[in-house]
Amino acid sequence: MLFVGTTASADHSWGPYHWSASSSPVNLIIGDNVSTIWDNHLRIAESDWDQSEVLDLSISAGLSNVKNCKPVSGRIEVCNSKYGNNGWLGIAQIWVNGNHIVQATTRVNDTYFARSYYNTPAWRQFVICQEIGHAFGLGHIDEDFYNPNLGSCMDYTNTPNDNQHPNSHDFEELASIYSHFDSFATILSPINNNGKNNVEESDWGEAVHQSQNGRTSRFEKGLGFGRKMFTFVIWAD
Image 1: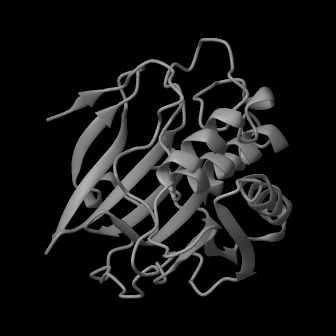
Image 2 (image 1 turned 180 degrees about the vertical axis):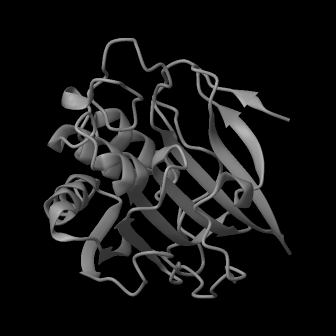
């Protein structure tokens, strides 16, 4: 069943999913697999999200091949490449076991960012900030591309100048998501990617959420034994 997006709300987790942690803040490594044109945008996004009281983030050398952006257990791997004319600017893919996030990747598609319309600092910062935000358990705070900006990278927009960073609502929602402790830290048990590159829509499973422009913004793929892969998409115009 396809669910249609809702209006703006500070309650914008995308489900019960979170990185498990026995204490706060949650320690997470972001793997840097990006080229020099993206390095500063990644550093800004990491610094922005690290302002959350419930996250303790650090950037480390990437452990993935930039083209297939293979997930690494317990980490968020961030990659850029020319992934092709497949329609998307950026995707975040999150693997869960039960309610717990096990591994995540973020990819930005240089096929589109090489075009003059998207080849701006604002578009690059908006997309990488939002896709990394999904990996913490955040959904979109608003899914209308044409209403006034809310000052959050989790707000859909066609004019991203004011939506390049998280805002206070994003940090409030993170505090809610990570308001409890688990009896264990994140289980470092990798979920097999089955050799899939996962850059094509056909690999993403069922369409489960739609934004207000009618495009599917979230996909869900069952992997068996309580494990799933979620894919979040920002489509190019």
